[in-house]
Image (tube, rainbow over all chains, first blue to last red; front, top):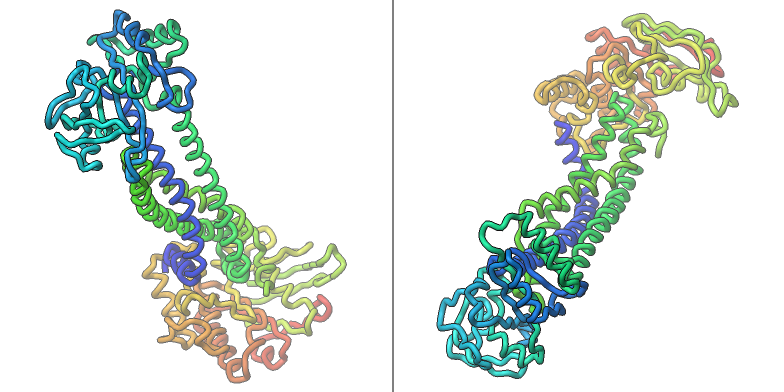
Length: 375
Length: 216
């Protein structure tokens, strides 16, 4: 019998306790992994939004809690176009309205028709809306599928009826799940004439990263009400909710570690009290303190790793269930990257190790004689 | 082989004097029985020889090693001595073969060598064919024989047995003592056995009687 064989045998002999503890660890890991997948997916969606149309950076209003509350004046968009490094600026008005029970958060985007191509919009069926029209719309490929609409169909957004004149693709989930109409039409319907939500800035070819950085600083200095973002990490400058979600993710990880460690400690301590004579015999026949400690720590680690594997499996189920939740459908595109699995593993190892420290120390420091006298 | 010189041991901060100036020598290959009533200090002496505890003063040497100054007590208990307890103390969730292999973990033997050694020992104690039984499935005498096999796992020079017949019936006692004698003859073991039973002690080559912590 190998040491590993003894370890497995010990866990199998107490299988109910092993399973229950592993399940508790699994719940913690499931929570952390699912939250991590959701946060990472939303962050990626945010990243794809700010990089729509291959923009070098995006401009929004300073200090807003939610990017959809950002207001950039159209005259500011025109001022941005005057910077010598800037090749083009596309102002986009983004509003969210409920469409139906299955689509409670449907994105409508207003863009000047002549800026569609710059914005990365590719018409795959039908045509673009006519400039000046106020009742024509194009739907993203995912939106058309979700709403069951084709070119020529009628669709109603916020009590306004539109004709679907085309289907488009921008190559990112949020965009392909939206509807685009002429900017002036949406501004009119929303009573936000002269305003957009975000401005997508493309610099001239050959502009270096340092020059882009300097440009962004100048823009923010010249327009204190505006903030520029060039990467998902900076998204928090125009949207606090993602930062809150990330903070919740970190908090959940710490809680899972602490609670998981407490559960494992409890299990290993119970096991220690039951096996006091067993540890005494092992020490009496020549086992070193280190070997006894290793046995206890490894048992805890195996329980935790098995729990983590189950937790990741449960997380798959949880994420599928979340995707069915219509409120975030279209925003959530979960991807189980290697990072997710590594995270589950290090949480499991952390839980197992922290949970085993005290019980293994007690087992190792046990005097063989005292243990042999234990009833 | 075992040399105990002027050993003193007390407990409870000196309030209980368990051993007072004990001197005892055991020759290589000898079977010594330490007898005495309960509380005479015989088990305490055995525990000191086994390095499970340390004397307050005095010297204990086993096979030339000063037991009171061991650099590695675990190795001593693993390789130099074998221990048999009154309550066998087998691990109930492991089978007989696995129990015998427990002391072999920290040795350099391969899995195959450990398995072979365990089976050989079980055969030597008359339990060949029962290697996959669990302790609860064995009689008291059989369990104690497994404990003896476990004590011999790493081929020790000295076997220390603390009241090994205490929970056995007459027939099992006879079988166990016969086993000790046979193993001593086959392996050249030195055996120190603690017992309160004079009948059991009579099987030994020599008896050392303890009264109130002193060898009389």
